[in-house]
Every structure is written in C-alpha cells, then in structure tokens.
Image (cartoon, rainbow, N blue to C red; front, side):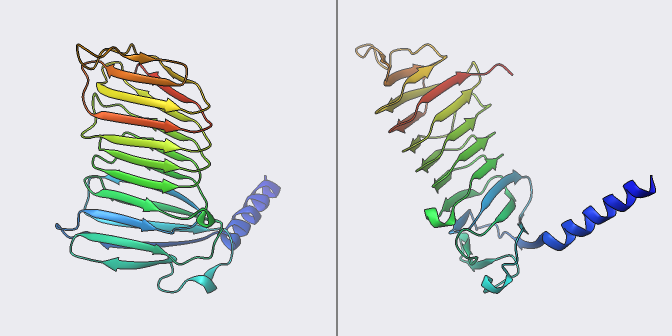
Length: 247
C-alpha cells in the first residue's frame, strides 16, 4: 500500500512539472455581442453557458513561455464596443489545449491557418457560429446559423433542436460530414459531394409543388419535415451522412 502511494505521488509530481495551466477571465459588456478567436494554436474546446464572463484556460504540455507576448494565457486581448478578440501569441504547432467558457448568447467566430493546427469542439451556443479550421470540427447542442469550413478534417454536428434559426453552410475538402438531427427536425437541404456518397435517414419532400426532390448518390436536395431554414452541405472527396437520432 505504501509503495502504491509513493508511485501515485511520483505521478502527481511528474504531471505538475510537465503540465502548465493558466487562466484568464474577461467580463463581457452588454453591447459586446461576438467573441472572435484568431490564430489560436492547438486544440480548442468552447462551451456556452448562462453567464456574463469569458473564462479561458490554457493547458500547456511544453515550455513555451518565451513565445507569450501579452499574457500568461498566450493570447493578445483586443476589445471593441461590440466584440472581444483573442489573438494567438504562441508559436506555430504549439502543443496546447484551450478551454473557453463563454455566454451562450454570444456569436462565435474562429479562424486560423493550418500552421496553427488542431481540432475545435463547440457546445451549447444558441447564436451564430463561424469556424474556419484545417482539422476536425465538432459541434453539439447548437441552434444558431452555422458557417463551417474544414480543409483536411471531418465535420460532425449533433443537433437536438427542431430547427435552426437561419441558413447554414458546411463544407470540407478532405473529410466526412456527419450531421445528426432529431426525428422532428425541419429544414431545406442541399447536400453534394464531388467524389463521395451522400446519404440521408430522412425522407426528402418536394420544396415546391413544381420541384421534385433530387435523390442521387452524390447529391440530395429537398425538404426535411415541414422545411425551414436552408442547410448547404458541400464536400470534395469525402462522404456526407444525414442521420436521424432518436433521443
């Protein structure tokens, strides 16, 4: 038992030496409606919540302190009347993990070059979300309009609402698009892949009386349920899956 405790203590000491975590808290003014992430390195996780603060936590698994310019969190903070901008200051390909808590009503925009590689995961936002990322994009419990673009990664969306608030555009060059909707979801779908198969668990209805739905191996176009907001899914070399998920 004593030996086990000593081993556990050694593990904790090892983790404390090689894990470097910092935190930054920003209070959001009532008129600041959008959070913009620019050139953040590493993996990013964003969680919406009912609050008025943005809480950024950086977990750093390597000694990268020399590349931080403005804060220990590795970002430069720029404030305007309507927007909070976080600009990455870490070196390219830094092995870090950002966790960001933000008010669920805020708009989110994230953009970075492929040299700032890493996955991004977003949960629980109810407003517009725009993401440009080289690697995988994961979204869950989102209801706002989406503009998503990946270059070499999958895009996975798990939606649990009946409809989205506005038109959405999802595209990737090399990867699959997988979207999960509840059985009562309503939308107008246009899904097309140049080289991959497109499939749907939903029956597609005519958008108008004169236009029959298009159902082909590489393209689907029509209404799901009662129709609603427009959803465009575009792929080059990957597949597109539209799944019906019963909660």
